[in-house]
Image 1 (cartoon, rainbow, N blue to C red):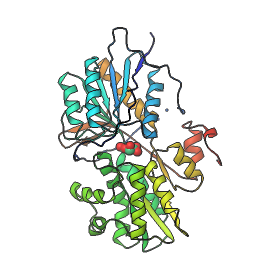
Image 2 (tube, helix red, strand yellow):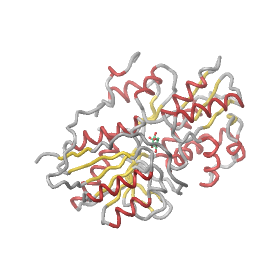
Image 3 (spheres, rainbow, N blue to C red):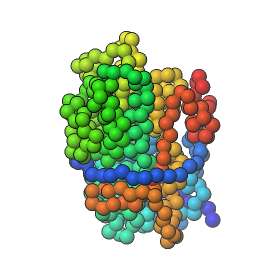
Length: 386
Ligand code: BGC
């Protein structure tokens, strides 16, 4: 039997407009498992003969390399399945996300794999799927405050934040009173809280003892002696330092933070992901005489080049091949009625969701060749100066 991969690339009027409200509340989880290269060769779309689709996949936006890579890795992995699959993008819009889910429901999907644009806003969409007996798998980001989520396939986001925080602490080298600038992801993304929580766990003792001095968040300064923050307290800090996951927001915040609290000498920056890290780095690098330590995550090709060039100090490799494999194997197990083995759980504010929790790797100039090239994640030819 031939694979039936159906890729519907939603017509591309790039709508934007961020969606709706709030945040959920969540906990952490324990641990796990590993797979190919750049843009895989894929045969485009073909729904099954009767036009139905088995597995529907909804991803948040094509505007970030991270999610374009997920699509490519899905297509590569699906090459070996007999199930029909369709991938839709929500382009940063929860309304469009709901439409995508409805389109897939109408095509008879039995499993929905979804990365919500906004964790709370996506609850209505997954409830609609659930009402039709569809199994819902939250992919990378958790859909919050609904009991309509069956499984969560994720990287261990607390450990992503911890790796970022640890990198900054490791480079303190006994210093005191060092400048620390904090940035976070979008408050509508539960992951932004998990990343911040992981980083805070490591950074807070070094803020409390004066090794680091936070320059751009009065709330982080107010809570500097708290080893654990409530969801609400974290929300207050994130509100001050959010990038909304947008490089342009990160850039303009960095610009005003530099004006309000000019950096000098060693400058430590917690940047939540690669897109924002490069924007923040570029802004700080305009200042003379700084030694910049800036974090990231996603191992985007542009950031791997920044790491090689000694600009971005680190990134966190979240091997999307593993995440895709986890989602596809779970969907297949559901379709075949097999037992699903999980290794973690996350409270989404309404229920505790069983999870497949995947580990991450810190990438710096010291190990970039081994982790990124030798592992087959990207081709060496994509970079200069390796
Ligand atoms: C993902 C990150 C990504 C960010 C912005 C998060 O939920 O885990 O990998 O960089 O969203 O899209």
